[in-house]
Length: 367
Image 1 (cartoon, rainbow, N blue to C red):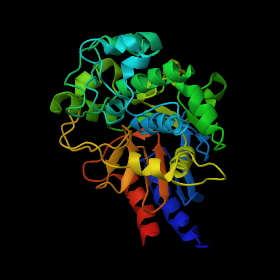
Image 2: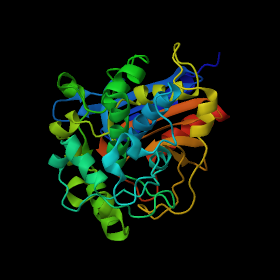
Image 3: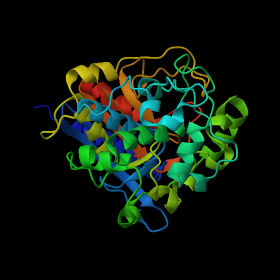
């Protein structure tokens, strides 16, 4: 068995340097190879105000990185025969069929081609606390394009689209399915959440802003459809992420996770992890195959999708990266999964330390 201690030491030095320089406040990095944990390192503080240190099981609120949990719930239920990718949404959610959406399928939702990525410009954080209101809003909307004809990240709407289909099909909230069918079997029930139980809130990392709010302002000015998918009052920033009512709510376009927990989940998509294998090899191949092409309507750039994930690094990594710097995913050809979580939201002009950490691990394993 290969000794991964030199890699762990190298990653530890890297994140200690990021924290020591002030670039980051708290960081977690984890990686699994063929079901075995090969990297689990942490550095810094989860909460500067209390001095609470980051530990391997500290949950971090993570924006789009959390969509990986939402998609995985769908695939686990499909593996159980409870969902079908080509089912029509309106067959279980009749109200959704209005305004030309009757033929929209779950597959189109998973590939962000359903055509309903936008929210009303007046949407507030308080609206996000009302599940039924958000579902009525989405069901009553007209698609921005004919479903299936193009794709664009459904930044917030993805969570309620998937979550309501799950709720109406299995008669349980999506958070229940995540807890019972994924987190608990993987012994990650303290590390993978949609809505965080009140008794767990004090364990969470607290997010801070480095330059992310300014970056969101710039995106609003430069990206044509940005404000349509993320209206001003619900932009993915640290203020929203630190609200206890938001943290407690099921908003399945985002999630609260540890790097170790979400890397473990991706590992269990590819193979067995301590006796747990979430899906079959055949399904893994299907859900990691690129399904969309052309520019993304929401971002304007190239963002190819598989069934529920983004195909990153020319398709080598399947997963999600979140606003402000977190990331998680898997490299199916290598049997490698990894995740990086952080609480100091920011962006670099020419560098991305979190991607550099991922590349460091990938290179060590691939080499």
